[in-house]
Image (cartoon, rainbow, N blue to C red):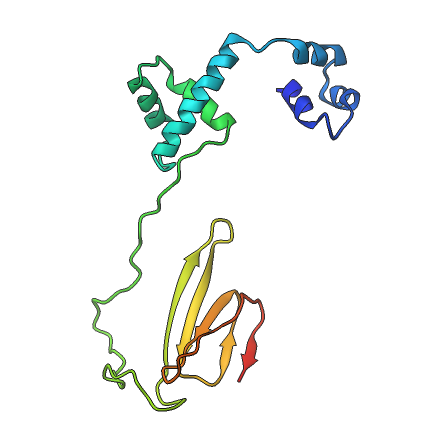
Length: 187
């Protein structure tokens, strides 16, 4: 593992300094570099291609047990720990699918807001009917961004990491603003 680390960073740092800091001899590192690839390593590289293909065909949802089963179905005799090690070393992980969680509670005895619009969403000018909604957009690393919308408004505002979109009911225009961390007032 130490020799692989040196090989990966030899263009950035001096080999002698890395060998000294990792506690290995320079001659040992160069012997490692000259040595031919072992048969086991060659088999691992061929197996890795099959692992990647199986993982891709499952839309990245298979972990090592299912990938092992797929490869065994192809007639290869492989162990589950070997597949797990290769997947771990190359950062191949199954996507975790989160179960959908219902957050709306419709079955309650609390009073409901009156429907003043009565499903008639057309109006002849601004500030006659206001409507709003909010949702969120999942991000890979940033969590989620909340998207909110208000309609039929002359004033525009957004707070925090919100994308806000306004489309007045009485007009055909669509206004959008980028994600911001400060409150903006426009109008």
